[in-house]
Image 1 (tube, rainbow, N blue to C red):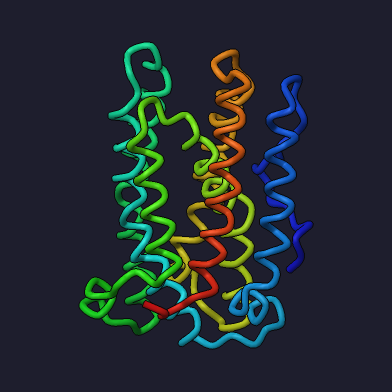
Image 2 (spheres, helix red, strand yellow; image 1 turned 30 degrees about the vertical axis):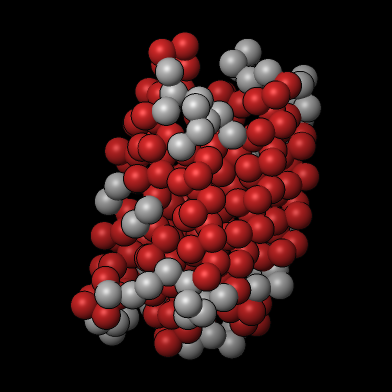
Length: 234
């Protein structure tokens, strides 16, 4: 697996007139390079992972995934009526995300994990930092910068999750119902990125908003790498 891998249905960011998508494309390139150095992802690419490694990854991801819908809903609640379209988009997104942790939990149990142990888990230090930052940004008035977080997280699902799912299957011989969480996000998040691109290239995004979006995307990409790198470190 390399950083140049593409997935059917995912449309990589293309430069737009304002330059915002070009700037976000640079953030994505940097993010991919950092992901390639994450120990568990490097082991996955090399074929050196175990079922225990996969369980460990799911266990750590779940503790932050449960916060996905709440921080998006928080952002929606802080858009005023002049940003009604962004509020509506965030509400719809939160609704789509709020059961994601259940998919992950089923995969975890399907590979021999304990649901009780999973639900009793704590966020690792990267997950704590990521969730804290997302809720902080979502609590701002008209938190348009959160679009940058969505760009990174939805892009990760659309472009990387399906690749990881197939690689775990190749290396570990897992069934489809053991990698459903990752495989599902390939298609679901590809659809989300199309909607997001339409917003990012609209007249709604001025220069100040673009700067906030890029800044948030850059921070979230770094914190997500920390989450994947600091597995079980609490």
